[in-house]
Length: 77
Image 1 (cartoon, rainbow, N blue to C red):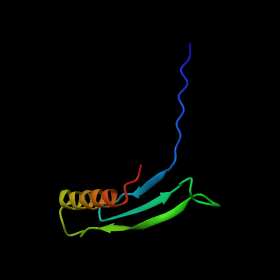
Image 2 (tube, one colour):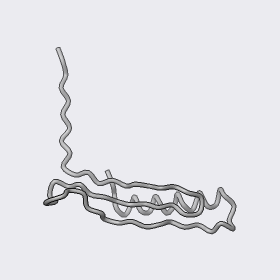
Image 3 (spheres, rainbow, N blue to C red):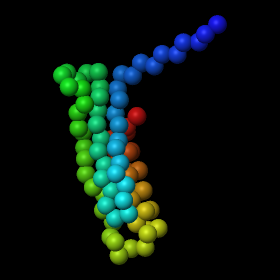
Image 4 (tube, rainbow, N blue to C red):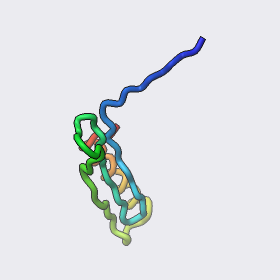
């Protein structure tokens, strides 16, 4: 008696993060079934910067806040 589980992904919307203490890169890519041709499409990319003059815990907190804001805005899976 086996169980078969199937996942149907209608939309794969992903964030990639290259973390660092003062500059963190990010990118959002979409692989929706609605896209024609090569399926990956860049949606947004950029760099989050913090001042190297700030203490590390403050820089990390600012970086986290900016990442949460981006995730709320773009809503990746």
